[in-house]
Image 1: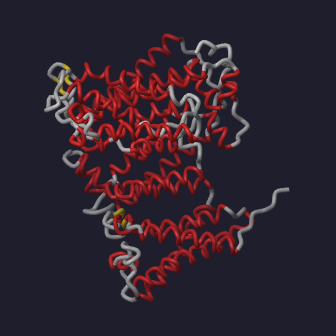
Image 2: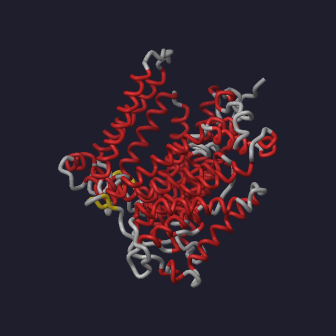
Image 3: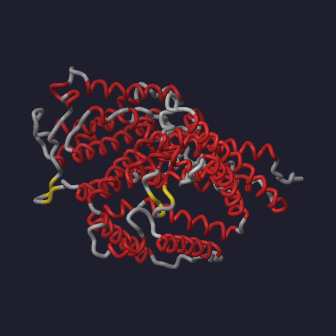
Length: 571
C-alpha cells in the first residue's frame, strides 16, 4: 500500500534553508546587481529583483508537489513557512550588511546591493519585514499555482514566462528591428523606454495563456490512426516542397534579422557542427573525448596557412580549395589520436584526449612552429570565401556557409546513425566486450568514430577561421571542448536535435543577454547540476538513452536497435 505524502515542519524548514542559500548565492556573486539595470516591467520589476523573487516561489511550488489532494491546505501552510525562512535569511543579509562591512570577504556585498534589498523602504525595520512577509507570500503563491488544476497552472506559467522573455528581449529586438518601420508601432505599444509597459504585460501574458490553452486543446484531441495512402511519388513531392520552403526561409532569415543576430547564429552554428561531430564520438560510440578542440584548431590552422595573404603567406589558395585539406588533415589527426587509445575507455580515455588537446594548443603557441603558424601572434589576413563576385564577408553571408555546413554534417550523421556502422557504434557504447563477441571489429569502429568526429570539427574550424579573418592560439582552449560536451549533455547525448537545443541554450543565450556573459561558467555548472538531477537524459534525448536513465520499460528496443551481429561483421 502506497503511503500518503504529508509535509512536515522539518521539510518546510529544509526547503526554506535551501531557498535562502540560493538567494544568498545569487546576491553575493553579484548577479542581482548586474541584472538590476535590465527592467522586465517598466519602473516596476527588474531582472535582479526577479532573481530575489524566484527562490521563495520555487520552494513554495516544491512544497506543494510533496502534498497530495488531501493535504492541500497543509501544503500551502508549510510552503509559507519555507518562504518565511527564505525571506528571513535574506533579511539577515540585509541587517548584517547594514551593520558591518562585508566587502572584505564578499566583494559584491556592496551598498548598492543593500539598496536593492531595501526595496525603496525608508527604514531597516520595514525593509526586513517586507523581505520576511514577502518571502512567505511568494511561497504561498508558488504553492497555489502548483495546486491549481493542470490547465490553469500551465496557462499561468506560460503567461508569466512570456512576460519575462519579452521583457528580457527588449534590447535585442530594438537592435534587430529598430530600423524597420513596421516594428516601431509594436515597440511603442509593448514597451516603455526600459521594460514592458503595463499594456504590453497584459497583452504578452494573454498571448502566453492563449498558446498554452491551444497546446492543451491539441494534446487532448483523440489521436486518429492515419492510414498511409499517399503514393511514393506524392510523398517525394511533399518532401521536395518542404525542402524548398526551408531553403527559402534560410535565404531570407539573415537579411531579416540583421548583422548582430546573424553573428550570434553563426557562433551557435559553429558549435552545432562541433557538437554533431562530438556527438558521434561520445553519444554514438561512447568514447569520452575531452581534447576535441584540437581538431577544431587543426582545421582552422590548415585553412589559415593555405589561404593567408599576410606575412605568413605560402600558396595563398582560395578558401574553397583549402577546405577539403582542412577536413582531411583533421580526419587524419583523429585517426592518429585514435590508434594509441584503442584499448582505453572511460576516465583513462578522457585524460589522454585531454592531453592531446593541450599538446596542440602548446605547440601552436611555441616558437618551434612560429615561422609557419605565427606562434602567439597567430595568422592574420585569412581571406573570405568567394563565388564569382559574391563574397561571404558579412555575418549575413557567413550565415549561409554555417547553414550549409550544419546541413551536411547533420545529413551525414543521420545516415551513419541508421547505417550498419551506427548500430555498431551503439553496440560499442553499451558494452565493448559483448560487441566484440558479436563480431564487431572494434579497431575499425573506434577509428571511424574518431575520424568522423574530427572531420566535422575540422570543417567547423575552417568556417571559424574565415569568419574571424584571423587565428590565435588562445581561441582553442580547453573550455571549447567543455562547452561542446556540455551542450551535448544538456541537449541530449546521442540526439542530433538535442545538439541544436543545447547550443542555443549554452552559446546563444549568453550572447543574446550580455549580462549573463560574466556568469557563463556559473550558469554552465548550475545548469549541468540541475540537468543531472532533474532531467539527466537531456531536453531532447535519444530514445534508448532516455530509457536507460529513466528506467522505463515501455520502450520497444527491437524497433530502435535491430539485430546487428550478421550485418556488421565486415566493419
